[in-house]
Image 1 (cartoon, rainbow, N blue to C red):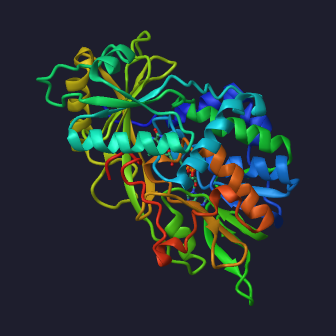
Image 2 (image 1 turned 45 degrees about the vertical axis):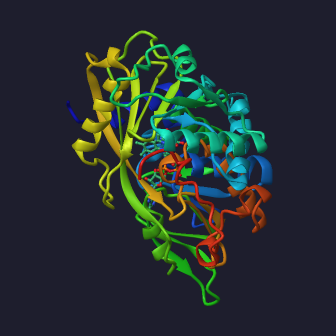
Length: 417
Ligand code: FAD
Ligand code: PYC
């Protein structure tokens, strides 16, 4: 298996596809903005877009140490679903699904949202019980989810091996029909173009190296590799690196950072109709519109800021994929990559004000924040604009790690940690 990055290709595609150079290539930073967003991933760009579109705040800089969409937004396996356990999660992930449904029209940019169904496999009695508990909880919250027998699962996804003698026997599956995928790059580009059109500055190659606070403790701006930039409000949306940034303001975060990997196969004609996830064996698979099989693995078992991860994790995932879908045994893998995800103790995000006045945190999405992108950005913009949470993110506080009012989504996070 060859290991190399396709991100320079992605950048070139973005230039030709969107007229990037003309539209949002690195304006000179102003000395002062109303709001600074650190991190030009989907959540950060989306936040800037909703601040401008819904709150009339347009004097905004989005500061990005690399290029926009080059973090986890451009590295994930694009699975979108809302089948989490708790009420708070149903609130935010369902909010996101509703926004996904209208996002291409809202941004006038095709994000290729495809509700082809997400099926989560159960391989043992414990999996069956966990899946059925989630189905019941989801239905109480108006989230679609249904139980399938092995035969029904195979009818929904014909390549699935449901032989009883399989190494990972399928004992049933939970199916969320409204779940699916979207094109991750397009989400970043669509929000960037729409925010830029409203006057937002998207400043790339601009790493934040310090956060400044005034005599009263409130945020006054940031230090960057392109100089000091002032602002009364700073939103940190830097998945995987939040602890490092918050430490610059004197805050310790309940987060750990892990590598998470994925890979794609050579492109083939359409063979795979839906998304299948198997948490027990740490493997997730769908087929992109380009024809590649998109396959994701579990996290590495050690904390790290390396965007690669151990090869044994991928080997294990591929073995499992070949066991569950024997027809893929002869496929060739094209490329692999990794991202850094930051994980909270309860596997739910922090989407909140911090104890530092003017400093806001959007982090801790761990292995599952792509699906939340529009919902997270929408309520984070509200939180920054009004200096108070939206009712949808009111539970995703930092305080919950002190009070113990946790939102434990370890099982629904689905990816092995
Ligand atoms: P990012 O897109 O990572 O953006 C943060 C940005 O901050 C980066 O561009 C980074 O360069 C920038 N930054 C960091 N530090 C600084 C600094 N000091 N100064 C300036 N900029 C800085 N989620 C799902 O829902 N479904 C999936 O199928 C899924 N699969 C995944 C598979 C993989 C392999 C990975 C790695 C993640 C996956 N996720 C998935 C998780 C998902 O990708 C993330 O939760 C989500 O994309 C986070 O978006 P973001 O905008 O917060 O972060
Ligand atoms: O959150 O659904 C998810 C997911 C799948 C693979 C990585 N994250």
